[in-house]
Image 1 (cartoon, rainbow, N blue to C red):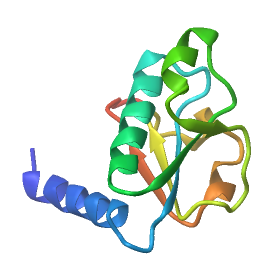
Image 2: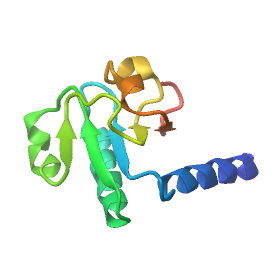
Image 3: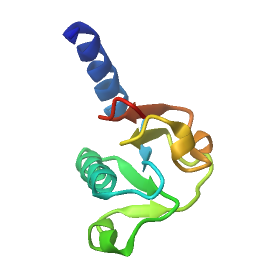
Image 4: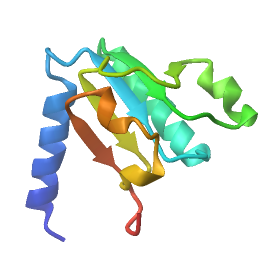
Length: 117
């Protein structure tokens, strides 16, 4: 495994997330999100809020069983060109996520642990 390339990607992501000009961040995930997607999104959102970012989770919807965790974060169904940065979690295929992902912001970071998506 080439760690130099991975380290470079990590550095680029951290640089973008901590950039002082990046204030409003959208987080999204695959359609019909499971606990993995919801937990990752809420955890990242809370961490980014702790460093002063404004974060909104953009989703087509989620199961009522996730309502207790989603109450800790802002979420929406559609906001066009409102964000400085979009993060797609738990999915690397934009066809499997919200239809309007390309409308959210100019920048997109994809973070996914699946090798086949």
